[in-house]
Image 1 (tube, helix red, strand yellow):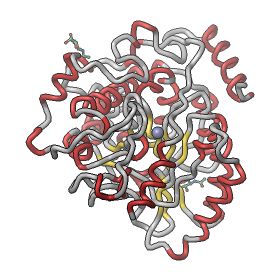
Image 2: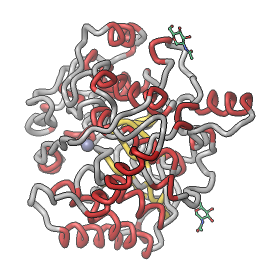
Image 3: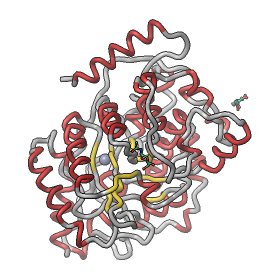
Length: 405
Ligand SMILES: *[C@@H]1O[C@H](CO)[C@@H](O)[C@H](O)[C@H]1NC(C)=O
Ligand SMILES: *[C@@H]1O[C@H](CO)[C@@H](O)[C@H](O)[C@H]1NC(C)=O
Ligand SMILES: [Zn+2]
C-alpha cells in the first residue's frame, strides 16, 4: 500500500510533467542507469573506474586482515568468542571495538545526531516534511542503488539543508568483501551522489556498522570519516517491517534510552531508517519524544562541528564566490552550523528536478564525471523495488558481543 501523501505527490508530479517544459521528473532513464553497476549487486571489479580508484590507494598502509565469513551481502558471522576475532582488527561488529576516529557520539551534551539509513525511498519525502516542520536537519546515509531510483528525492534532501553521507552501493557487509570490492562499494555510491548533487561526500556509515581496521583504513584513504551510532541508541525500527518488534516496543526502548540522558557525558547518535513505510511512521513520534526530553536534533556535520561537511565543500564555496550567484546546491557551501531548513516554497516541496539543478558547480577533475545526472534531465519511471535488508545481523552482533564480553 502506498501512503496517501505519496499518491498525491505522484499526481502533482504527473500534472507538473505536462505543464512544465524542460527537464522532467523523478527517475533516471535506463541509459543513464546503465553507466552504473547493477542495483544492489557488488560492482564489477574490471570496470576501468574501479581499477583507477583501486590504484589510488596506498595498500601498504591497509592492514592485512582476513575477510570475514559471510553470505554476502549479509552481515558476517562473528567468530565464536573473543579468540576468533583477529588481533588488532578492532572489529566493531564482533567485539564492539571503536577506533579513535570512529564517530559514535556527539561530543556536546544534549546534542542528538539524527541519522536515517538505507534510503532514499518513496517514504523519504514524508520524513522530510516532518523534519521541515520540526526545523531539524539530519544526516541521510544513502545507498547508491537507491539514489539511482530516487535522484530527485536526494536533491530535495540537499535543498532542504540535510546532510548526505554514504551507505555504500549495495549494502553489503564490508568486512566480508575483498579490498577492491570495498573500494568499489564506496566509490560507486560516492559517484552517483556526486553526479546527482555535485557534492563529494565525506562521511559514511558501514552497513550493519560492520567495520574493522582494514575497512576503516580504506575508507580513510578515500577521504571518509566513519560514523557508527551510540550503543543503546539503535531504534531497532528496521525490525518492524520484519514483524520481530512492534511500534510500541520501539517507543518503549527509546523511552528507556532517554531515561539515561542524565548519566551521559555527551550527546548521542541514533540509528533509524527511511527505507520503509513502517520505519518512517515511527520516525516522527521518536523525534518528538527526544525533543521533549531536551535533546537537540542535528545532522552529523553539526554534531561534530565540522564546517566542511563534504570533501569538496571548500571548492564549492570558492566556485560559488567566483560565480557570484547562488549555487543550486546551497548546503555544500554553508558552514555546518548554519541555520537549518528555510521556509519551503510549494515548488520545493515537490521533488522535481528543476532546471536550476543543472547549474550545480562542476567540481570534479575527472572528465568522466563532469556532468551531473540532474543536468541531463531525468525521466519518471514507475516502480521502485525496495530491499529488505537482512534483519538478522544486528541480533547476531548483539548476541556475539554478549558472548565475547
Ligand atoms: C530553525 O533552526 C535554526 C538552527 O537550529 C535556528 O537558527 C532557527 O532560529 C530555527 N527557526 C525556527 C523558526 O525555529
Ligand atoms: C566534460 O568532459 C568532456 C570530455 O572530456 C569535455 O569535452 C567537456 O568539455 C567537459 N565538460 C565540462 C563542462 O567540463
Ligand atoms: Zn543499512
